[in-house]
Image (cartoon, rainbow, N blue to C red; front, side):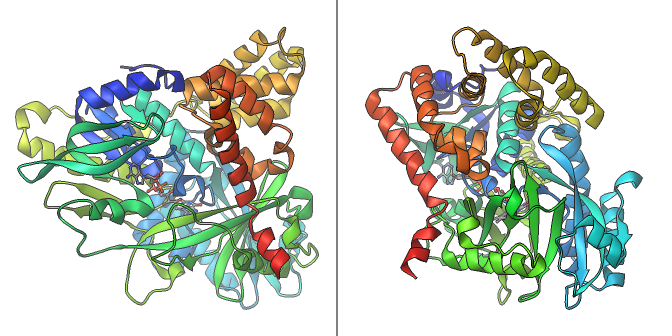
Length: 565
Ligand code: FAD
């Protein structure tokens, strides 16, 4: 079934196929929704293509809180069906991608003036576990004030009444997106980044394909498909506007959410904490990850005229988040200068008149155009597989009605029990055994357990390819860290369609967000290595370096605002 390895060096092959095949389904947008839909469609036996205008996961799907969670707070809004569906999906997504969806203990401090009383928290967490069908060893435990203090000594004590301990899953949104995309490609889909849909092709008033602009070669070409799905997240209305049947009825409502990253020692919580923001009745997460802790999120309306392409973290976002953290953890005294990185993302929510950002439903919605274009928006990272199932059900039904002879054998959704690339582990113990075994092997080439954990949490069983490459490089590169960097980069280019520094340092490896403080000494070296593998001219390298430097500066651009105050 495999078309070819998902290598940036084979980009031309992918493009050729896209320009010449006639697909059953073409998906626009390479976020988690598009990637999930591509995997669902191809594994049912549909000839599938997916195109992304920038990089896979470049939109909202690399800028979320990175949790696979049921959304405890949606219970308060009585969104029972939503909590049930995403709650149940947590276990499915974890089972299919154990390397990148990892159980995380959460403490929920119950405080005076908080959104839930002790009794209501207990009931809410119990309902949450029940709706999500949580296994007995991961069910919630209620804590006394003293037990909560022991679980999280940094939490504010004067208003503390008790707490709850429960489980969610932490993930990496961009990695989950690329794992879905790789698995779709391995199952026959043609997926490509840096190809933008600029318009539609019509026959007898129906959409039969799209116009494409390739942002790497500059070429324009067309892709033909019987069904076209618009899964462009915050851009869904823009893509609907390009259709001859203009947007009517429901529209998107974009809200911005910001996360701040601080060194772990500045906010040394023992586990993730989900806490009240007393000022406005919202809730916020603080999540430890490796050497850092990240905190978020805010939720503010994103003005219609603001640029979707560039949501950035402003000083007011930083002030809001730090104020909430410093109140709930009164000894930490975080300051703007402690922030080492940030990200800002846009929620593609469905507009409801008169509602505040945090009150808008997180449900997904399908939009139908008279031209046959179908669009899907809203939803959550956690529920992506179900969203994909819903939208592919829609197009399968249409194809069956239009051409019964050709499509009657198309299968039902196959993804509930489909392990993603790198996720071939039967249990958590199997992940741990894998880590222990590989740690033993790589000690010969100067690598440690921490290196292996880092690799496994990104690439899962595919880590073996990187280790093998690191062994191959043993003679030619003396320094163990450098060798590992080159091996990982080699994998990202040859197996994950990585085209430039941004793809690698932001979305494939998450380094800009989580290791920005040590990145300055590495990224020029990585650019040199990338130039060798991808045969860049010096001018290409300088351009890609400049692009990355821009991103590197922009995540802390709020510090410039600070200087002006
Ligand atoms: P996107 O990821 O934005 O993907 C759309 C893609 O379409 C983009 O990559 C874009 O480049 C591409 N595109 C646009 N126009 C074109 C074109 N013309 N041609 C080709 N491609 C195009 N959910 C959770 O479950 N857990 C969380 O912890 C969580 N936290 C969140 C925190 C924040 C701050 C935000 C903003 C969201 C959060 N969410 C969370 C929600 C979740 O992140 C989103 O629902 C999800 O990522 C949306 O994915 P998407 O694929 O629909 O959109």
